[in-house]
Length: 112
Length: 116
Image (cartoon, rainbow over all chains, first blue to last red; front, side):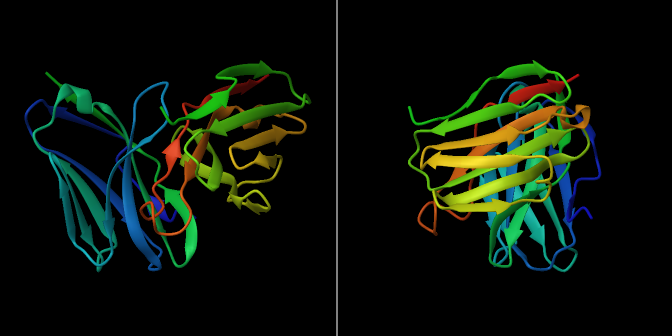
C-alpha cells in the first residue's frame, strides 16, 4: 500500500517558468513532510520541509504548500532553472514513528 | 567535510553469493538507515538503527540483515543474493531527538548492486 504517491513520473518545464510537483498521502498520522532532490549518481539531498501546523513554507525559489484536508502537498519552483533538472521525492513522517515514507519520485526536466 | 560514505559504489555478483555493503559517517549522528531504490517505487526502508544497540526492520527487510558496528558504521548484508535484489542502495543518517530538525536525513552516494 503506497502511503505517499507522486502520480507524475516526469515533468518537463521551460526555463524561467514555474514548476509544480505534486504529492498525495493517505496516512492522516503524517505530520511532517519533506522534499528531496536527487541528481544521477548522487544520493538524495534535502530541499525543503513543512510541518502540518503550517500550510506554506518558502525558501528562496522553492515553496511547499500543504493541504491537509485533501492530504496533498506541492512543491513550486519559480523561476525554474536548468540546474533544477533532477528527480524529486516527497517524503512524510509522523505518528511517533521516526521514519520517512517516500513517494515514487518525479523526474523534472527544465528545457532551455 | 562531514560526510556519509558507502562502499563499494558498484558491485556485480552472482545468485547465491553473500555480499556486504558498508556505510560510514562522520556527522556524529546517532540514527542510520538503509534504503533501496527501484524504478517506479521510490526509496523503501530496509532496516534502521537509532543507536548502536538498536536495530529495527523496515518495510522490506526479508533477505537482508544489518550490523551496527559502531555509532559511525552500519553495514547491510545479503546472505544469499537473488536477481530481484538488483537495485540502488542508499545509506542515510539523522540526528536523534528534535535538536537537528525533524527527521532530516542525509544520504550517502549510493551503491549500485547487480545480481546475475
